Amino acid sequence: MASLDQIASTLLCGIAVFWFASQIATMILRPTVSGVQVWQHDEQRKAVLQEKSLLYRWFQPLCEDLNQLGWLHLLGNVRSIELSLAQGGSELPWKASEYLAVGTVRMTLAALFSLAVLNPLFGIVGSGVLAVIIGLLGIAFLPRQLAGLAKLRMRRFKQRLPFAIDLMALMMEAGGDFRQCLSTVVHENRDHPVGVEFGVLANAHAAGQPLRDCLDQLQARLRDEDVNEIAFSIKNADELGVPLSKTFLTLAEQMRLKRAQQAEKLIGERKTMMAFPSLIIMIACLLVAVAPFVLGAIYPS
Image (cartoon, rainbow, N blue to C red; front, side, top):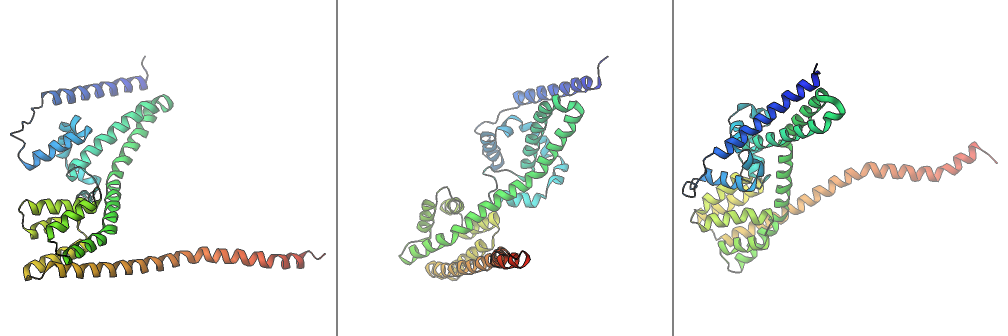
C-alpha cells in the first residue's frame, strides 16, 4: 500500500505538471501585440517589462491574474511600494501590484525548488512546511528590499545634487541657458541617479512640455524636500521673471550651507558614538596603570 509521502508527492507532481502545461498553453495561444497596437503608454510599458523581465515574459498571464487579486495588497503598503518604485528602487516600469505579483511568482518558484531539495532530508511533509515558510518570508521581504534599493539610490542622488546645482549656477553665470545646463549635468553624470533624473527632465522639456509640468513630474517621482525646494524656486523665478542665474546662485549657496550643516550634524553624531569606546579605552589604560600597584599590595614580595 502506498505511503502518505508517496500519495502527497504524486498529488503535488500532478498539480505542478497540470499548472505548468496550462501556463505553456496560455502563453502559446496568447495573441501577440503588433507594432500598430503598441501605441498606448500601458502597452509600451508592458512591452518593456516583457523584454527586460524573464519571469514577466514567461508568466505574464499568471502575473496579470495575480495582479487582479486584492490579497496582494496585504503583502505590503502599496503606497510605500509605489514611492519606492518612483524613486528608482527598480529600473523597470513596474506598477506596485505587478511588482508584488512577479515577486510572488519568483518566491513560489524558490519554494518549489526548496521543496525538491529538502524532500530527501525531511520528507514531503517537513520539506513542504519549510518550503512554505521560505516562500512566505521571501514574499514578505520584497517591499523591504525594494525600499532599501530606493533609499540607497536617493542617498546617491542627494550626495551629488549639490554639485550639479553648483555646476548649473556657474554655467548660468557664464551665460548658459537652462537647457544647456541640463545637458551638461546629464553628460557629466552619466549612469548616476542625478544624470538619469535630470535626463528625464531635459527630455521632457525638449519634447515641448512646459517647464512647470516637467518640474511637477520630477517632484512626483522623487518626493524629496531638496527637490521640492529646487523646483519651487525655479517655478517662482519663471513666473516672476527673475533670471534663473540668480536663482541657481541662491540655490547653490543654500546647498553649500546645507552641506556644512549636515557635516556638522554628522560630526556631532560621531562624537556621541565615540563616547562609549573612548570610555572603555580610558578604563583599560587606567587598569594597566593601576594594576602593578594593586598586585603589589595584594602579593607583597
